[in-house]
Image 1 (cartoon, one colour):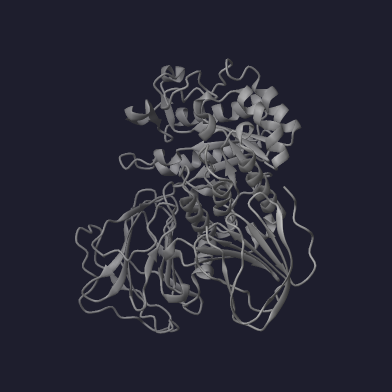
Image 2 (cartoon, rainbow, N blue to C red; image 1 turned 30 degrees about the horizontal axis):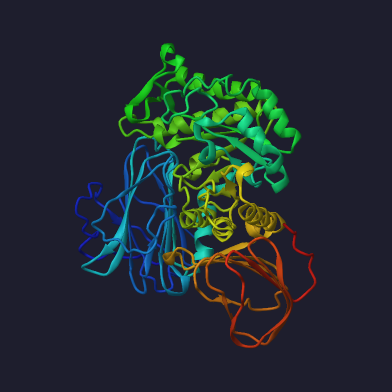
Length: 594
């Protein structure tokens, strides 16, 4: 093992950084591929080289704060990537920028310094359990080094802190999922029946006007289109039709909207649809009867017409867990959408994050005690491995009508939470949108599990046909799209092209006027979904290829059925906007029709 020396000047200067302490060099391995990786820490760590250029360093915290400094020359650096649908992907921040809080209920402490050709110059990840972690990453102007400063607070950090550093020079699409698997550890993710089925959510098209009649009106059409789950969102617990969370906390079905909640669940189940109830988990609304029970709260949120419950209090936790158990027991529903868990994080309440994670764990255990494996939905930002191991599916944060944000969120979470079903934020569109725009929304969510929130009974024919076609394509190729090897390209450009492949089968989604490279090797099937208004250019860098060619338009109508010869070089392929092409070098089953 070769000892790595830090510069004599010590750690990089970072204005405003209050966590710096006496830091000593941490010896790392010799095989760093000339990366120049340097690490300092406020206490010694045990280093293990997992493979060439990939290091795991374990620090014992003893309940005390820990500070780490990682530096690497910013040679060939193009962008600093962190996962998240709202996180900038095309910047290299300065070292004097703002630090980011990463807790078990907010974000994932994982990042990658990107080089050219989607190479990961450095990937880091840190596992501090439920403890508070603050990360400041950026370029040091004086040295052109990239620095990552990590501070782990003492509160809630009773075990070891693990740090992963990868300078092996692998691709972004390979290195980031490896770091994600490392973060998840042996616990992996919690599976549940239906977690990979398309979802119809009531929120965007019904809001608090939701009722049993509203849901049942969608049921037959939803089942025919291939949806597997209905999320009955905010509104089932209140007679109000406004916004705000003043009705949260009692978690009793309002009978004027849902006179027979158990009957509704059974009616949906008879059509092959599961039911999931929305829960504004931390909120005790101003109008809730439970305010008279003496429940403990962390703080008031007057803008939301609610207070935030304190999960550290045993009585309060028992009440919340009991209400979750009762709503499932009474209605026979299949699971819960546990919303707003990030609100349990309170810097003025040490231990609130750990207590919230324990509360969610207890909810899941109690629901399992009813004889079901419950569907549990989380959403951004509470996607950290420590908490999200209790979720059966994770959803992109709210981004109504924003297809790009949905795409980025899905791909980021797929990479950083490998193996976990990642759902889109419910897809919606404007009443006057074209079928092509509807298809673009679906294609932008193609590599995740599609959630949709539109009134299926009021769709114009073109929109309905586009939705039906793309849901049928997704169902036909679900295993390839969700479990094939995921390779999203150019993260700093928000993934203009993304592909999944397994064996000789390749599925490519195109979101911008970028060329598509024909796969190398003996591929058998290539599917291309076009979410741009231009026709794709195919680049063949190998030998001449002959293939059968089928092209469907946005409504699922077959418009081309023939053969194509691709000589080396570029080829224009006239895939309509919102359409799909398939090239086959061997016989495969026909596409589903709309």
